[in-house]
Length: 424
Ligand code: LRH
Ligand code: MN
Ligand code: MN
Image (cartoon, rainbow, N blue to C red):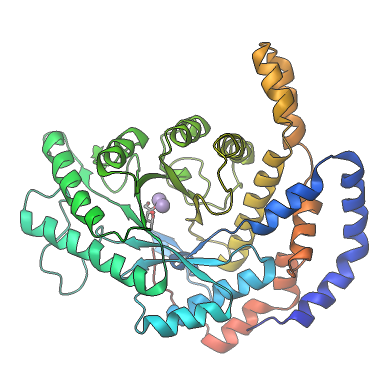
């Protein structure tokens, strides 16, 4: 491990006087802070194994140094993040980008860093070397039965890996769709996809969930076979109670009201989980909260309100994951920023005066409703988030500590200048 408890303790000691001032001020201003801290400590966000290296676009990729060269090193990177913030206690694998050779050993290694395995992800959007049938024209939707079967078998294989690692969910994202009018019979594509998903569903262990992730466009630009939350919900409803919709924040058309989608899916008991990121144009996969932190807060506001109304456990009843790509930033720094942004939005949502908001809504007092929401949003909750970290043994300033202790330099020294992690 690149960072030990002593390094974290001496970093915290240095920052403590300043932190205590900010925290004491907030405690004096805001009721209910202790409850928020307890919830923040429990809340964990999974890190995707494919986001630990530099991402690229189709125009280029500019790798940084010290990227993890294999799954063991990826686990070690997530372990480092978790040691710094104690909020990244899970890793999500994309198969076959990351295949555990020896599952028991991989699981034991993760446990050393206090990590568990979150959802496993299948990949039928790329052809792999030696693969018999191509996914050029789709996978589960394909006109050819043998290609569909290959995609189904792959998903079942991914479930098998997940079982060995202790995962409890499979995320299926399909690139299936069409690029031109006339290319596809929409009804047949839907039916084939549904039948494929049904076979995959039948292979799920009883305590597992399957998340059907939707996306409006890319790589197909005319139609996507799971293109929006309505289509995903159709599949999930037809599949059964272990099937849920997964919301990736970047997968909507511009200006979509994601918070309303979240509220309604929760109400239908069909919201499974999240892929957090931010975007300005499309599936930009930018740092969470970097473009529209207010939307992120409004999403969390719906989550907290809806989950509380259903007596759901915030930390465990939904799958929380980041799905981002880092083209110009250090991936580990970017991930620390994303987790921090999630914690801030969650803390702000927990501070919303729900009783007063309901009262304002009931009385059509629109201005007051806005004031109530924005009071929470404009509260600087960073000392609360930092206090939660302090109490769980993490760093008061994870990013600052990462830089001060030159942890990237240490990784470069260990792994080399030119390493390229698998992923997008
Ligand atoms: C598709 C997606 C999906 C994939 C990941 C690599 O855009 O969001 O979740 O599995 O990116
Ligand atoms: Mn995603
Ligand atoms: Mn995406």
